[in-house]
Length: 159
Length: 159
DNA sequence: TGCAACAGTTGCACACTAGCATGCATAAGC
DNA sequence: GCTTATGCATGCTAGTGTGCAACTGTTGCA
Image (cartoon, rainbow over all chains, first blue to last red; front, side, top):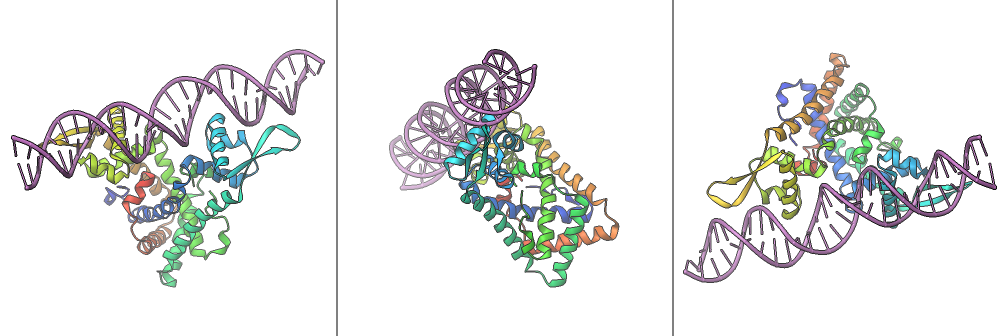
C-alpha cells in the first residue's frame, strides 16, 4: 500500500520506478483476480508450472512449486477434479506419473497473460508515439539494469 | 511465469514493459518473502491496512480487507497473538473496537517497503546518469498513462 | 423505558495447505 | 532372486481462511 510512503527520501528515478511498479502491480492483480475465483493461488501456481514444464513428474512438480510431495499429490487431485490437469502414465516406467495441462488448463493460463498484455498495450495507446518510444527505452534500460527475475521466485506469487 | 510467452505478437513498447514488469515483480516478491515466513498473506494484508489506516474499527477493517467480519475477528486474534497489532477500546463508545499496529507491526511493514525501495535504487545505480534519466522519464510516462493503481486492488496481493 | 439496530465475538461447518509417517507398487542394485 | 531404494498415494494431525447463524453487549431512537 504505502509503497511510496517516505518516498521523498529517494532519488527521482527510484521514485518514478516505484510509482510505475504500483501501476504494473495493478495490471497483475487484475489479471489474476478472475482466476482466484476458480482456483486457489497455490493451485494456480501449480497449474502454471505444469503448463510451462509439461509433461512433468509429480516429484519434480512438487519441488518446483516448493511444497511437500504429499501436499502436491492432493493439489493435483483437486486440479484434476476441476479438469485443469490430468495425470498420465509414463511409458516404460509404471512407477512415475506425469502431469499435463488439459486444454482448459492451458487456456486459463493463456487468458491471464493475454489479458495482462492487452491491458498494458491499451494503456500505452494513450501515449503519443514519441512518449511511447521513451517508455520503451526506459523500460528496456530498467530491465537490463535489474536483470531477469528468477522464474522460481515469481512463482511465489503465481506469476 | 510465461508472462511474455507469445510476446512477438505485441508492439515493442508493450514488450519492453512486460519484461520490465517481470523484474519489478521480482523485487516485490523478494521483499515479501521474508514476511511470509512470519505471517500468512491474508494476515499481512490486514496488517498493511491497519498500519495505513489506524486507528480503524473492526467492521471498517473487514470491509477494506474484503472479508467477513467474523473472519477478520479471528485474523486479528492471530495478529494480536503474534504481537503485530492490538485492539484498543474506543473512548466514548464501548461497542466499537479499534485496531492499531504495535511498534513491531509498523516496523515489519516499513521493512518491506524499505527493502523494496533500496533494491530498486541499487539496481538503478548500475545505470549511467543519462540512462537513469531515461528510465525516470519512461517510468513517469508509463505511470501517467496507466493511472494510479487502486489501493484496494493492490491489497489483494498484500501490497 | 423499551425496542430495534449495530459492533463484535463465538460456535459451527467446510475447504485448503502443510508435513509426517505409512503403505504399496515398481525399479534398481547386488 | 532378494533386498533396497524410489515414486506416489493415503491416513493422520494441525493451522488457517471462509461464511453463516446465533449470541452478547451497547447504542440510538421512538
